[in-house]
Length: 100
Ligand SMILES: [Ca+2]
Ligand SMILES: [Ca+2]
Image (cartoon, rainbow, N blue to C red; front, side, top):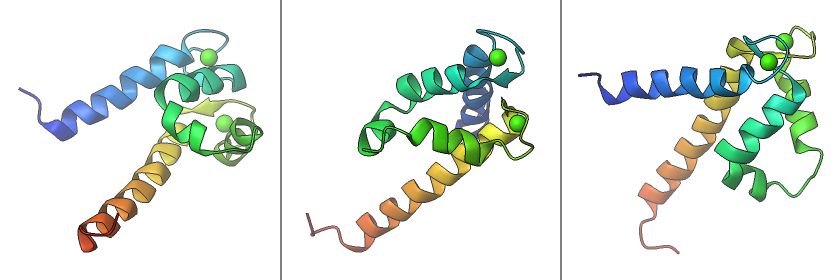
């Protein structure tokens, strides 16, 4: 039986390919595929960002090799970035359990 972490990695790969396979290159996310992925899988995050240009900005940040598509490697850096932000919130929450 896979561990939690193994399952998390598998989920990451599955989700990426679910959206990457919709159009064009099935191994990379186009701007539209990235937008769909974020709207469905990262809805809470997207809602917290009031800037409507967020997807474009994220796309530009992620696309480190500048080919206009987001590869799995590039996508993972988004997940890592968000995970680090979440972990910081988690730590803050742990340090001040009474503050609300
Ligand atoms: Ca694609
Ligand atoms: Ca790229």
